[in-house]
Amino acid sequence: MSEEDQHSTQPEIKDEDANAPINVKVVSSTGDEVFFKIKRSTKLSKLQGAYAAKVGKDVGSIRFLYDGSRISETDTPASLDMEDNDTIDVMVEQVGGCH
Amino acid sequence: SRSRVESCATLLGPLLNDKSLPLVEEACDALKRLQWTGKINGFSIQVRVDYLAHLFTTKWLSSEHMDLFIELLRARVAGMEHGWKVELPGETATFIQKIIQAYNKQATYYHSSCKEFRWIQRVGQSLAVGQKTLLGLLANVRDTHWVAIIINTERLTIFHADSMGDFIDDELKLALQWWTYQHFGKDFNVCDMPVCKQQDMHSCGILAFGALEAFLSNDLD
Image (cartoon, rainbow over all chains, first blue to last red; front, side, top):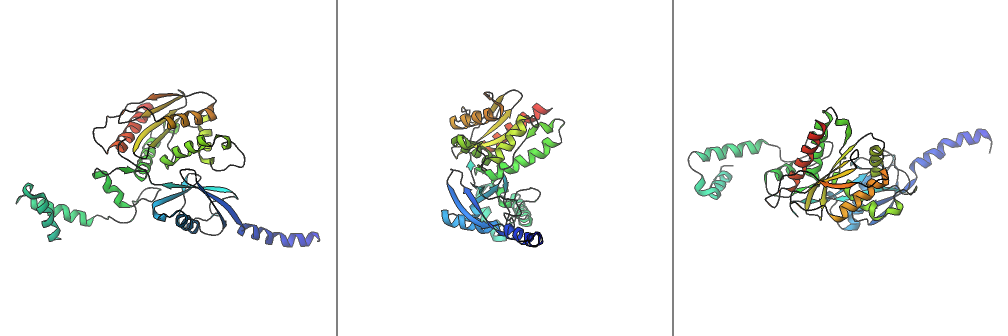
C-alpha cells in the first residue's frame, strides 16, 4: 500500500472505529453485573430498556448513572465519551423515615 | 369540583362550618391551578412534581428528595466565603453505595483496568490535594433510614448525625474509614455531630439534611 493509499483510507478506518460497538458493564447497587455490547451512536435509552427487561423492573423506577451523572434519554456512548469496558451504575430509588 | 369539596367537607365533618367551607373551596381552587404533573423546574436532575407532595405528608422521603436538598444546599454554600471548601456530590446516596462497593472489592479499586470507581476516586483525589476539605453526604442505611455524613479532611474526622441517636452503621463506618485511608494514608476518627432528635417515624430525611446544612453553615461562617 502506497503512502497516498494509506492516507486516503485512514478517514474510513476512523469512521468505522467511531461506530464500532463497545462493551459496557451495568452494575447494580448490590454489585451484580450485566454486560452489553452497544454501538457508540446508539442511544443508551435502548440499553436501559434492555437492562430493565432483563432484571424484570420498570425502567422508570431505576436510575442510570455514568461517572456520577444521570444518563439522559438522548445520551449515547459517543456523546458521553464512553470507552470500551466502561461501567454504568444502576440505582434503585431509596427511601428512609426511621430505623 | 363542587362534589369534591363537599366530599372533603363530609370527611372533615364537625371541623367544618359555614366559615370554613369557603376556605376549603378556595384551597381546592388554588390546588387546581398548581401544576402537579411534569418535572420540577430549576434543578439539574429531572424529578417529578408530585414528589413535592411527600414533603407535606408523613410519607418517607426518597433519594430523589435528598438530591434536591443537596442541590439547594450546594447553591447556598457557593455563595459563602469559604464555600469553595465544600464538595456536595449529586446522587448522594449512590456516592455512599459506590464507596461501600469499592470497600467490598478493595483489590480492584486502583486497578488500571477498573473504571467503575472513577467517580469516587476523582472526588477522593480532589480532597487529598486540598481542592476541597469538606465532603457532605446523605446516606441511606438499611434501606430505611437517612443519616448525614461530613468528612473533614483538615481534622481527619468523619462526622455522623443520626436523628434516632444510633451509632454509625458498622459497614458504613468501615467503608468510609477504608476509603479515606486510600486517599490520605491516615486513619480518620468518627465523631457525632449535632442533630435534632427524631420523635416520629418519618422525619429522618429532613433532620439529616438539617444537620448537614447547620454544620456546614457554622463551619463556613
